[in-house]
Image (cartoon, rainbow, N blue to C red):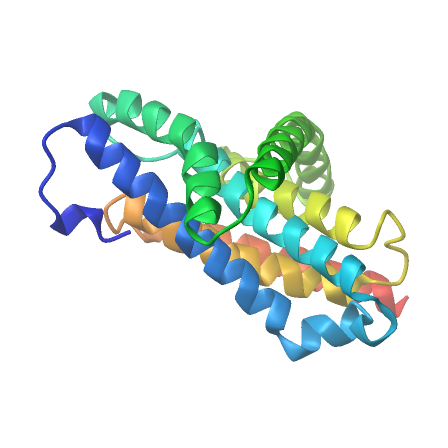
Length: 230
């Protein structure tokens, strides 16, 4: 993410460097969550073999990488219109940037193809799920009060991170998510910190709309806590 301080000969070169930086940050954040003691306790790592732990790690990495892609294509991203074409180009470079990063770490070509497939699969899944997540969020919010433009803006802003968190949680738990709300909330919080950081960087430090969205996110987490107690 330090590409802004480098000199580039073309927008293409800048996009490649930025994509490389984004996927490395994504992988680092996934690793931090994977190594988190509370995450490992809630995911019952002491009962999982190495293969299953590796599978979970892969799901976390893909979740962060796909979240980067969803941020870059978010229709409500507050950037100049002329910057949109660059973001589209940047988005297209993210999957390859990730496999290039893995290649630099010594991952074999056959496994890189598996990563390409997994990223494509999860992107298709999460991109499709965005509509259901947005609809559900609107139903929940409208049950409490009439929605205004600010409410709709906050819902739209949170759709990418909520969608990825729900999908990632589902895959980490192999679909058996009942009674595992705390694991979901921990995953959502980690993804949300990453999401907010990326958006702030892309939007040039325009924090205010994001801060309103974070308040809405805390309400989501609070609701899940209340449901668990019932």
